[in-house]
Image (cartoon, rainbow over all chains, first blue to last red; front, side, top):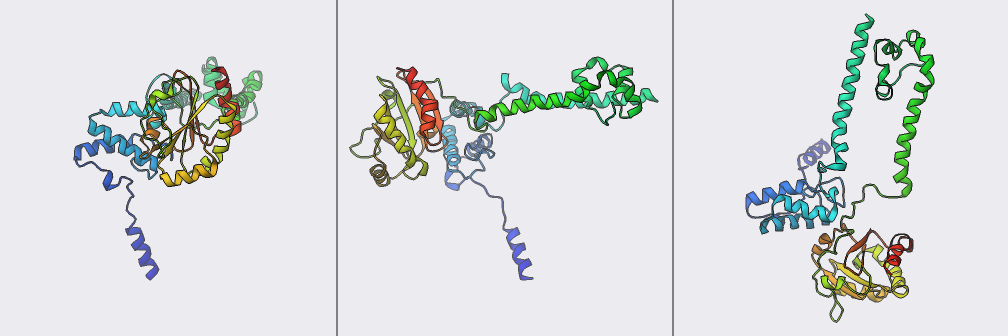
Length: 131
Length: 218
């Protein structure tokens, strides 16, 4: 019984962990929201699979601070992305930009889906003919 | 063909001409109707998946054998002017450097390191060797460190640096597109970044990646 209660307690206390420290946050709510949105589009280059908004890596914290500083200085979101892309490449963006060499990446799912759909249609047509 | 299922999508790609009514029977799963036509093209169908596999395997093997880390961030700074740097010398009485010092008579290595970083310790011997054998300047950027700790570190490993600056908040590290320590940049006489190496600088890395570039600068 006690074990179960403990388990329930532990599960109840398992809140999602946010990486952004209160000391990092901007006082202005709209600017802070912008910083959060920008952060969610930027990859933590140490943990690779995580955005900097949810990463606890030190580099991610440094990047969060940098994003906020730039927002306060009046940079647009695109200027911030451009600054980091010039240093870390497209990889720093969680969503690779649609351009030249990445068109294959973006279009492949559509092409594969259409091809699959075409195959299904052809098979249907064939079955119809056999009858 | 006696076997069961043939990849229709592959047929579609390789032989779009077979997709008229007669040929469609041929890709049927029923063995008897399929065997009528497939003898002529059986061999092709049998080997098509294998050939496709070989192509994909070759595409995968190429970067794997090259030993590159496919998930490593690229180095967009290569070919660009070295990013600005404006930091104080790491220790009292020590030489520092600024952006304008990154263009000069000799090629420059800019090494991001820290006393708290284990693999930076092993790197020092390699830097020392480069320092004595090459006509090159070695600048250090000490990341998020304590002066006391740096002093002890340099006393223990020997000091291969011509100048060391302190990056207390890690801003220069971001400006230079580094993801941690150690990282090493090669800068030519024009102040252009020629190479960026992430991770410890080993003798192997030096001779394979840096040395040819340094030689070319002579």
